Image (cartoon, rainbow over all chains, first blue to last red; front, top):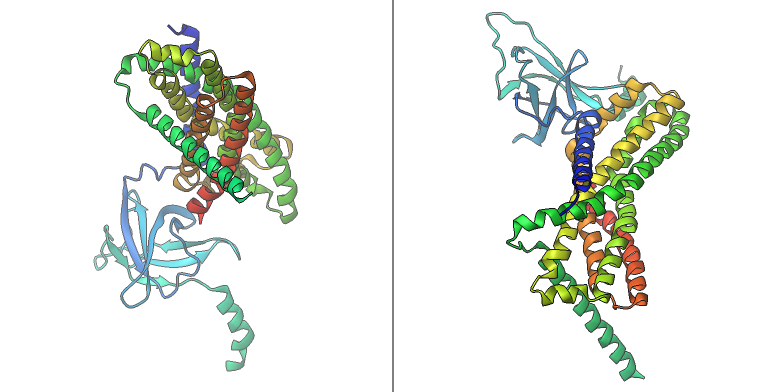
Length: 154
Length: 259
């Protein structure tokens, strides 16, 4: 039979290994999205999504409330962005607006969500809802182009 | 002259195919359920001790130092761009994606793979394997399978431990010595490291490496020429082949996973 000591060491080894994986998952990757669970889906149509990627953040006032889960082209060739928003932030009215913003001049792009007003005419967005008021990505090259050549139009 | 070349070509071809076939049979034998689950467990624990626990020290120390060096080198590079806060991201991503799985696999091949080959080769040379067969005990179940599964379980865990200690080492140098802000170190790391994209693929890589290394080690030992010279050759060949296989496979896996 194997001695108690070996069994003990093997047990400790397995434990350390699993602890290391857990540490990587929690401390390093901060994977709260792994649980998934409580999210609901909103979508929005843009003219241009620029450098937006799947898993880009959706922020309200700088606070992450969800992530982009899919980007696809609609029937009329306008980009459709599907967002998963955490369920605890479920009080956005249908007058909310979304814009594709850039963190810093050259940083990564994210969706900035501006909550709309809530009155008797507006409805609270539920899962599968569509945000109508959108502002597309600012494309740096277009801006430079406007800056260089646009001045002559006036 | 022509016949001689043809002869040697055919000979090496036959040898290669026979070897591949024997290796395949070995893998099959290791994977085949023995139907003796009760007795298998103690054998596995013993091998986990030999293969896993005894590799722990070298993995921890190597991980710590590689994390520290990464942090030191990364800092001197990043500080030029004023981006030293991204140090955590750099250390974590390079450890999780590449260095963790690959370096721990190389260390594992040297530390555990060579020992497996030498042990099984010596068992063959001293006719312990034939004696087992004489006693109607299948050496595949008794000797090969526990070692194979122990390697398969150990290496992903060792690789995770390696990465974890590497990140701690990087933190030690980057934050405690070079003065990167600890909040930024962790926050930027957490924002950029993804469970599926980085950690899970790293673990998958090291599982593939584990299969390849233990398979090569067991096959070389089992097929060793049963002399002292043969065992020595087999042990060397295990380390060389396994290391090259790991590096080659790493390129292929990276190309498949991250492109």
